[in-house]
Image 1: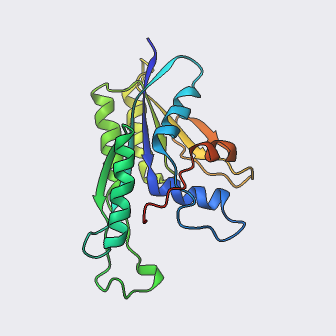
Image 2: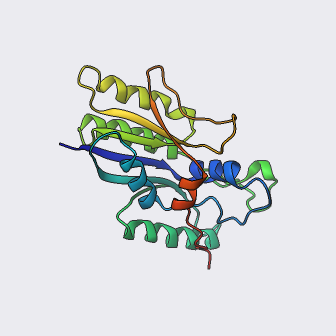
Length: 205
């Protein structure tokens, strides 16, 4: 039986790390760094050493406020609708805004809150329910490491479920990935793969 793959994507973490990996040479439009989750999930599934089947792609993404930031909220709605139309599961949490938004300095910008927790809870919950054989997690957020290690503990003795991680590889020595206390396979994705999954759609239009 092919291994069932569920891909967990921390979207804004992926977005910002793509920009820092592949778009530092010149100022890049805001849409540069965006990816197509369904395409990325398919590519990661095909990178395995033996037969695999993609069971689900799950994207974790903050939701802009429809009252405090209506323009961003409309763009978010279009983007999420596009993802769901391609079969992607989208998990959202409301973005946190400073009290004086938008009259704040750069250190008080809106922030995602609870996205890493939502991903971690689902990662462990789906492992306990045996809804995947292998979870592929794409994020650089070290807060996720305890959840990854919990899944590895669940799989001790049987080898299922198993954790793999993913990170961009910009071709420099300054590369980052999630590491656990146990061996964790990493899918390094270079710029050629990034270009395959890049989504340049301007959802604000």
